[in-house]
Image (cartoon, rainbow, N blue to C red):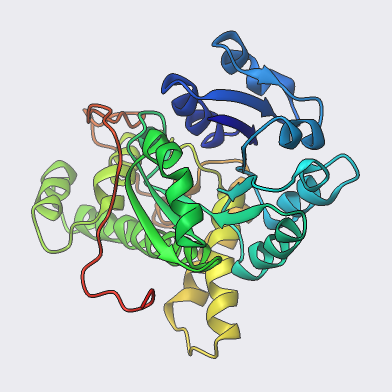
Length: 322
């Protein structure tokens, strides 16, 4: 399948590499050509603008840092919309707002193409091996058409329902991860100040009802001190803010969400927008004048699960597609 891919950041470059590795024809674009060098060396082609990329691709994928950037890349004069036509598919893999993806989806449909929102979850280390989880929102027929691409990029694939539903669920899961990150740091600090060996605390939590994906992954990087989750504080603030704004728009009386947003905003103020997001825990270390270091924990995450073909998650008892 001929695929165009725009946005070769920490996640996008890894997803694009999986497509190339699985034998798909790939044309790429990024604001910095240097970001594409490894892919170009491996056989990908370069597009000078979004119009060219879309005109020469059956499926166009965007994986960009914000809703505003996605809108710009689609709507600018030589943007993706200008190159879309009958039968093509646009897959939005950025973390974005459902309202934005639905608005852009209408513009895509007006060109005769089909829109899907397809965010991923699981971390950069899982993206690099093709084992990341993928949500996909949009018409079932469109989902089935791109399923081979999704299987090439990810391991567990969920068709979430209508366009925009995947973006909502992505924002929800990012919020949960943010809560777990902050609570993991607090748990480590209380354990250390209570005299518990943090190596013992880590494994005790890991085998308990208090375990989480964040504890098993980012928890190790906190204990190492590298914090290198490959995801930056400004993106974390964007993600938890998207959830907070959605909840408020739906008139949900959120209690924890404003606390999480304030903590991440404070982390950005203290350490800057481009530090790793897990450094939100460093606030607690600085405030307590106590570090959480433990020898033997890794300085980066590696996915040791062998790469394998992805598959759709079959959801029992669903009613939304009836």
